[in-house]
Length: 310
Length: 291
Image (cartoon, helix red, strand yellow):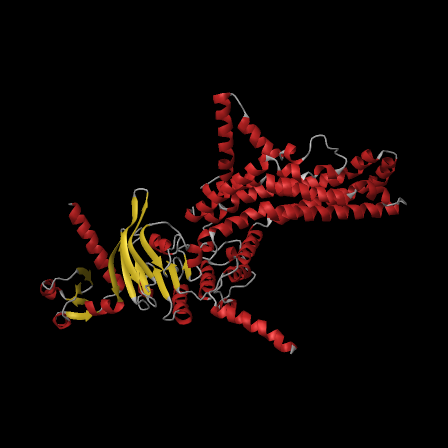
């Protein structure tokens, strides 16, 4: 009975593989396309891991002064306590985020250029994977993979930092609560995840889209082609109208669109005040940016279809 | 249904006409040799067939439009380009995983079997392999795919004779059956002429010769004549004449075999000699027209 019920689905799977028109599900094509990006661009995870290692090494040395710092913090009010103790944790998160952003920029510039330069595009295109799948899998690295990786690495690094600190505090006879309570890490992790999704993925999407488009189009030096048009437009605008709207718009985009992400006047102490998804989702800057990102990616798909090796 | 069908296939790069209105039809189960000088349009034609380049005119491969339907077409078509295109950073095992992941007709065990006959290790990266090994690897990947059409563009370019021989031997013995179609563009005609069923010469974007091998064998004759017989032989209107040690070699289209036997040694010409004759005449005509 049991054996029979086991054997039926098996034969069905075999029969499907044999008789049905062989088509790979889109999710499987996407999975392997992303996998190949991770194989090719190992800096996606090596760079943030290396930075994480350096942070932990530096922090380990800094724990020499930790018990003194915690004793000093105990005399302060809660806001100052948090600011003092959370500072190395915020700095670690910031460093890892900055690293993955730089990795994302260089990844995008090379993503559709490298395969044309080394002619491997002829191999990739000899397989039944559409240009849309390929471009989307490449876009998913800065938009999905790197933010999630940043979050995971930051959480692990901060967790190890807390464990190292706790060991030191216990060794010097202090309660771990003197550190854990003002840090409120789980709240700051929620804030971090929110920041990564809103700013690094959604708000920066047009930046990555633009870089991928340039990477698909440029025959050489994609980094120059990514930057020069922006400088040129800013310059022409300045000379023609003596205004700097375009440059300000680009700067606002890169700065993370602070007014769209946070509410002005929110208390910096409480990480929860940063989480204003309603305000963020209602900001036109987000939707204009996403529309531009979609247009850039559509352009990259078209270019990949017609561009050969260079 | 024809495997490949083209009508008025045309491709222009700027001012250069790469394909000048090609008509061709390749039936299923054939092995077609596409032969032409450098820059004749071979690669462009093959790229059009596998959907790598847009074109003017009509083209169908396995009933599909290669340009608009590339990703679906490539489920049934394999392609080896004229340059090493395997990504240099990839490990052999990664390529096996990836092709197995995206290709519905890839048989990994078969690929492993082909690789077992070589010295290629699974952990090697492509950049660590020799040129010949990269070609072996690519061929192993391609032969493990149960495709209906295999398109090869100078697949053995730059390889030594041993690898070249191995390449075509395994292609014929381990891969080809009469349900598959192979189109191969090459310069190295001598090595593949005995495996071809059809031959096509392409020159300056046009197809100038298109015959099955049976037709070639029944129509074309080559005769080696001594100088004193040369005049008599020339009277029979050879399509081409070349000098060899001890006499002239004259190439005839549709001549009477017995008549030729009286003049000297008669044999079926090699594809290379036929190619020189056809392309040489074309060039001569073109120059004549220009004058």
